[in-house]
Length: 178
Image (cartoon, rainbow, N blue to C red; front, top):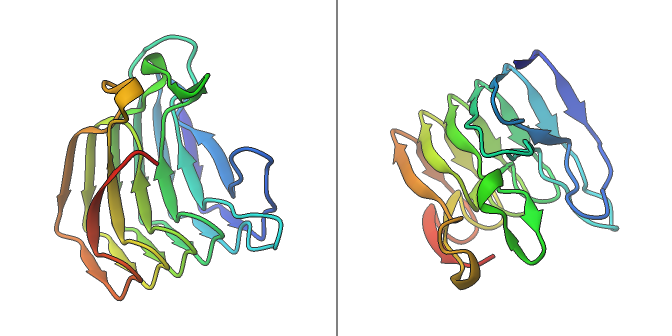
């Protein structure tokens, strides 16, 4: 079990592949909690962007994981405020590394250079009671599965009771591919 509480991650620099203030929350087979944390100003340098929080399943097997992100702030990051994604194997998302049972609630996602919340893959995801505003791209984007990994895209995503405003492109969008 991993618990991050009252943590501030600020001014992190880019990784060559993923970037991020915090990387790989959600090792399989565990219940993980990220509560009352702040992720801000990560990857805002000219070399590239970073997500505030990246949620992936890093287990070597397909054990399910459960991650709750509650009452966090992710702001002014170089890429997405929060991204939910599978680990990459070759050129496609690996079916065995899809995060499952994710809940993102009571969070503030604002002023990020891409999306407030980007759901690239995952199963059984609940997104509710968040404030999402002022992001350069979309407030919440849920991606369609790509042709080469049709089962790896997001499935059963529930989005409800969020306040979404003043984002650059859309409030909520469904997107194809990346």
